[in-house]
Image 1 (spheres, rainbow, N blue to C red):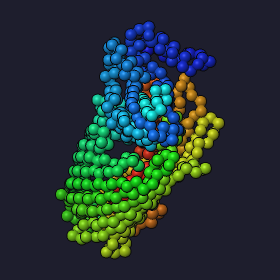
Image 2 (image 1 turned 90 degrees about the horizontal axis):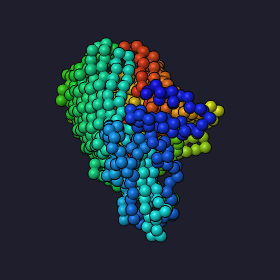
Image 3 (image 1 turned 60 degrees about the vertical axis):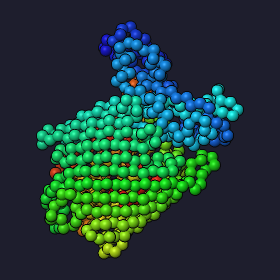
Image 4 (image 1 turned 60 degrees about the horizontal axis):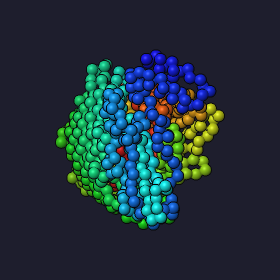
Length: 593
């Protein structure tokens, strides 16, 4: 049967209409129960673009200004292309199997993400923000929120919410050198939109194991409060447990936010020593508590889009305690500290709905605007109270040449000697407009990062500067540290014009160079760390598993063992540091915390 299905798939005339191929496959599969089951499991009833039509145009306030929402009608469609009414009619065992293998998103889950409700006055911004927030969730493939003109009256409207699920149960596999990994990630646990993740990796050369498990409950009871518990044990028997509960400033409409986190970890780390090229390994145990809260005050709005500018006032207390640290610590590298910081900032956050940025033919909400933020507070460390002040500013916009965003942060500790006072970080990203290469549309991405820390306060385990970020060199050991770094990134994204049997191909190339230096080293005189990667995204709107991404990355020389490394299928094309222009939690100049 599988062979017959393949023959039917491969030899349909190219002159026929595209969808006739899938109609013929469906007709062929109906002849036997087993092939019908295979068809139900692999193919959609209709393409995803037909199930939920998405648009890049925002709702206009003036169109329905002054009207009230009479009804909110929510429809969820599973990855196979069946709505709730269709599912009720299905009784065969293979329908039961596929329905239960995937947890369909509950109506209540979708409703909890809506910033509007029945009986409210129409607000175009609330409709757009609700659609945008749903679009960011990994269990959602497509979403459309619109007003039903056919059922609306002179003084009231009906709002229709259509959501197409993504396949949420995702196996994970990776290979890098002697390390192989397997895991599973359920992004829509029981249809609640919660995330359950488990990963196991094995190092066959060193005979070591790695475990990671987490559960994240998003948007508890429609409050936009997220809670997560995570446990990890790596190849070197380092352990970590993290519990956090938070409500971010998820939208320009958000008025209050806050969070609390507790983390314990035990690690074997390298201890830097003066004038020594071989660092001894020591064990540390850390307990940290992080508490913050804030409020946003709208100060202006755009009369067309109603996207507001806000003043944000936030306070944060952080306690970082080493319960087990080595005695030979000449830099106070493992020194406990507490800090209290408060910030005030002005943020303007807008969004443009674009296509073909990182995903093929899917709406993507790209942030632009500006922010200015002032931070002050104190650091209590080594029996000293040290005042601190910092400033950050960012700006991003679309131009005739493409999109750019830049962000600069500067911080200073007072009552310290000159070399330990100041820290600086700069991040930028630019991508071009789509250009036509005849066989494909192309987009170029460029992104630099420059970070300059100080030996005293950023040469510590908590605030260390390294190159192991997800958008830099993620396979690097976190103990490869310094006080200053420079990273230059480049990415070429292609969207092939022609498709094959409704398969759309989007290959990409990534490359990066990075430098990391200690206080007495010149940054560009250090070893140049490089990587190059290739990948491809494959899309087919007729398939249940309609988005597949494959990648390969090569690292010529990895620190410590100075050997090359291959990394399969862990590189993604959307990890470049785009500024979301969200309200910031107060922090020291940010090197990762």
